[in-house]
Length: 572
Ligand SMILES: Nc1ncnc2c1ncn2[C@@H]1O[C@H](COP(=O)(O)OP(=O)(O)OP(=O)(O)O)[C@@H](O)[C@H]1O
Ligand SMILES: [Mg+2]
Image (tube, rainbow, N blue to C red):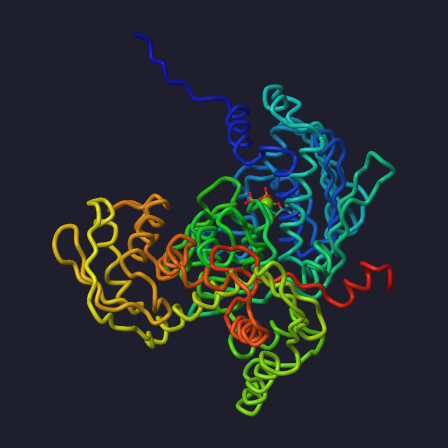
């Protein structure tokens, strides 16, 4: 038998490698902008035609290249950014593999013009399908311009996979926006060269993420975001996340950055979802700009050709840190409580800065009381024995009283659990519940956490349980029904022994207890209420961590500011 294995020609090797990096026009743009940023540019202009399939041109005012470097730039594994194995785990630049330009040049017609600032002459290089066509000295502005024409001209199959120019443009806009957020001090301009050079995106330099988010989404969105931050040794997390009433039906709008590199990471996405677990409906997603700054030695960015994936050495730790950071940003700690209330419920602005000391804290308590009990709440009435209409701090508010009550009970149970102050009520006569075998198996998993919430449940035999006490919040409920209904609710989530065990969280147990079926206490709020009852319900609601949504994610309050009301009636 003749030998079968042959070495592939270099040209084919390059095309195969290019295939991994250059998937579509947006990937070319990503690589070129990243190079411009690594070259310390302050203004980057991106032009494109036909969604980038015909032309992509990226020019910058960065450090430029010498004529020798310009030649080497197109060699595979030629880079100015790392030089040893140690450097690979200490990466401070966006590029490091020396592969992008070689890959792009292997599958398109590329022209490069570049000049270093202190050099009189610049360099012009033309490469098509990996073959050098021209290399000249020219006069050109300082910085670098790279034109990429006819992407995949030499790989028709690949070209066939490209989507319509509009779809490709969508990807381009997404890539440019993802780079614009962390590099907000850089001016980025995206131009459609077809239609008289129409400017599609223009992000002049700003100071910080918030201003960039304002440029992208506008003020209406920005005011619905809260700052988050947290840090430990070697890792800090910061960013902006949406308050629970601003959600989207996909995760597309979430941006994750590790050391300013835009990445995708299922564990981080899961952490975000977990942080919002009891705040928004399961099928909705918050808007998130999450930045993780971490010692480059604790991550590996060399796991995927597009460098959009990152491996964390301590992934579980980071996962939990993300949850904690988002939760504490969203949670109304005394200090943020005031801001949240005034931001959402009123026109009064209290300037409160974190760490401003005890005097301020006293003032805060005072304000909170003033807001929750004082003249800021005025009950206007009730609609259909279901909704409370109230003026809160000058704004019109409609409150779903059942959802409000659910939120209050949830908060009480959870706070009691966290601070170890669970008030439980002993039953005069302990109750015994019999369950079917499958339900009993589920309940067995939950006994310990339920007991921490104020129950006193003991397993009596294979299918029966003795209930001696229940949390005061559920006083008057039929304890057997409460447990059976709760177990059924949990079964509906698809939990069975050994499966989906991560669902056994305090939040989820409380949610199951408060599910419509199980909890009559919450439903009891349905009905006619006196003004006094409504006031105290609202006061308690405003004291909860998260008054806007119920634990199942439904809205609790709809607010109409006086400005909005004026707009509705054409008064500006
Ligand atoms: N816009 C630019 N300005 C100045 N130098 C550049 C520019 N673009 C590329 N270079 C130089 O060309 C080299 C090769 O670029 P290329 O993108 O191929 O690799 P890289 O950025 O080093 O690594 P990676 O493949 O991970 O992107 C870079 O290391 C840099 O020295
Ligand atoms: Mg690069």
